[in-house]
Amino acid sequence: MRAVYARREPPLPVTVRDRLGELFPDAEFAAAFGVRGRPGWSPGRLALVTVLQMAENLTDRQAAEAVRDKISWKYALGLGLDDEGFDASVLSEFRTRVVEHGLEQRVLDLLLAALVEQGLVTAGGRQRTDSTHVISAVRDLNRLELAGESVRACLEALSAVAPDWLGAVIDVAGWSRRYGARIDTWRLPATPAKRTELVAAYGADALLLLRAVSDPQAPAWLRELPAVEVLRVVLVQNYL
Image (cartoon, rainbow, N blue to C red; front, side, top):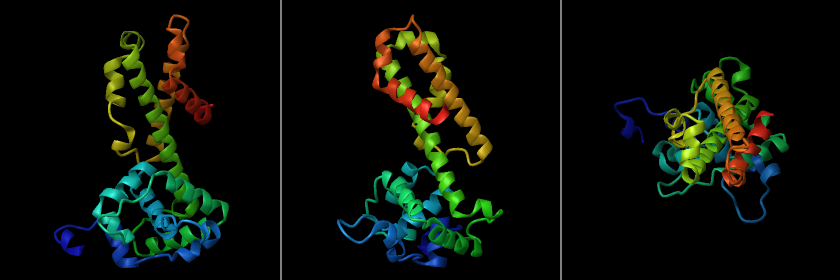
């Protein structure tokens, strides 16, 4: 792998693997994941994926794609090139089980301490490098992606069934620039301030759309579209 990056600095996943090797045996997670039934994806590897996705500012879907598509991630995780990885939902389940069994401090903090000691992750104060920060940061990114994708999906549904009505209530060109591409195809803001700004923008757009759909002058059947109902639920659960 070093030969691949002979003329440039290798990416973080490659450096982590070369300096730290295989970090955790799955036995460390036996309390949370057990040993019975059909074996799932290695929890030791999922711990490393969780830290790497925080370091590279990726949502669960983006991290799962990196495992499937990036040689550097496969190398760090000790996977074959033909390994298909896992569904993005596995990461959420992993975080939930780790927290429920109180393993986040014992396991993820040990991993982060090793990364900081090697200079692979900037310390910047304990609050920025402990397991609570990692899990919180990843969850925030996924909520941000959910909000943006819900607005985008609602826009697509409305533009397909009522393009003239939609053009009368929003600036279609401006909204297309914000929501033309899937949210998980671009890198979300790295700083909390920028993420907060984007969350507020998604919330304002969601509220505007729902108010427009609920207006007495709007076709009543628009309110029954599945994408509209999903957006309503996302807004209530994440903003109210």
